Image 1 (spheres, rainbow, N blue to C red):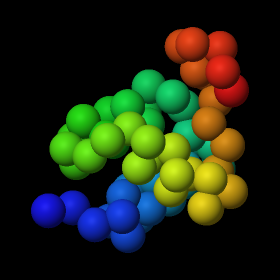
Image 2: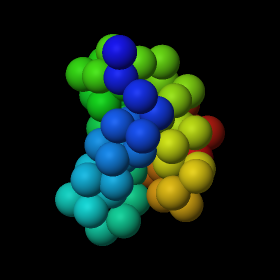
Image 3: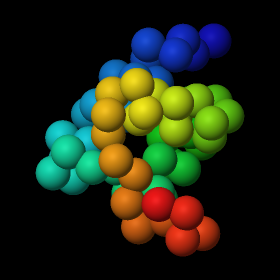
Image 4: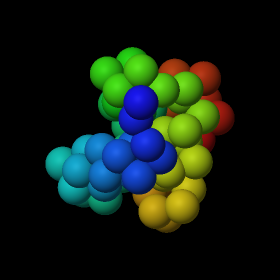
Length: 60
């Protein structure tokens, strides 16, 4: 089982690759790859103060 700390680590790594931000599509890929709910990725981004960008729903 994947821990929330592992999700945070994946979010940090992805944000580094995208100038400190996290594209929504990448957040979805992380959730799918790790097999965790998308909300976990969103919560990790919030905790790390990583802004989600390019949201397909126009929410961010």
